[in-house]
Length: 149
Length: 259
Image (cartoon, rainbow over all chains, first blue to last red; front, side):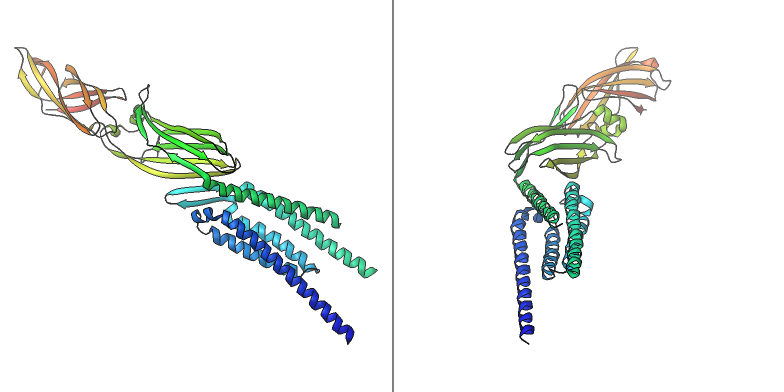
């Protein structure tokens, strides 16, 4: 009975710590977004939907960060990290329309070629994806080793 | 395996930070880029072409250099035929520096007349495509373009030869006075000469004459040409061949029947 109580307490502590860590990470990420959004404000005034696009990205990304943190210590954390990397790739491709963005503003057609940015971001995301895969493999490997011991 | 994974993580984070900071600062520094377009000017070049000049001042107060700054003006007619194209290219505008340049585009009226001779006699609309492109921080290509239209005023609008007045000059010759009138709707002053060749109904050149013209922009012109013709060669009907010789263009013959 005492052992079960101790075990419960330990689990509760662990979950609380994870939740706290997830909250802190989420808040930190949002703070970074908040600072950067001030610099991006001039673009938001010109490009309609830019703010919404960034906000949606930040929301989903923070959600994945929090869920990933809550599932830390399990294989799901690595799956979520991989999903996060894939989400970044897909979201950037879709929202940046393949890297060439066209905006019409008072009879002026503005074209911004962000392909270089997109390629670098995709490569970094792929690197993140590969890292998550390696982490998942490593996690399973270590788990198997411990269970054998 | 943990160490390589950690190294990958650190490297990824490092490059993400660089990418995000660079992208955001490059986007932010665009607001510190100033463009001042001066008053457009129209003139005539030494080789008698119409010259459009647009003074441009670019002040780069951003964090990065601006590369491959290019302005292109393309003038075309309603059918899409390109009349002229002018390009101004600045390889680099360094941060904290300002550059003043003049963007020029020339129109050769003779070339214009080759595509359509109506430009001399009828007003129309010309399309202008203005394209400004540059590379922000020398790596992010940005292009802005706009379509405009300007009215082309015909320099010889409503060109007409009036009723010929004949007076007897002597026993063999008649004095023919041919009134000329037109309106110069163009944005340039028209100076030059008009030559008229008078042919009778048997295609025989009866006489020819010339007069100088000087019509300021947006003003009417009225003048006349005097011809001395042999009474025997005169017929009731015939035609005139009109030639226009100006520094900007040469055109002719414009055939106008009489009688």
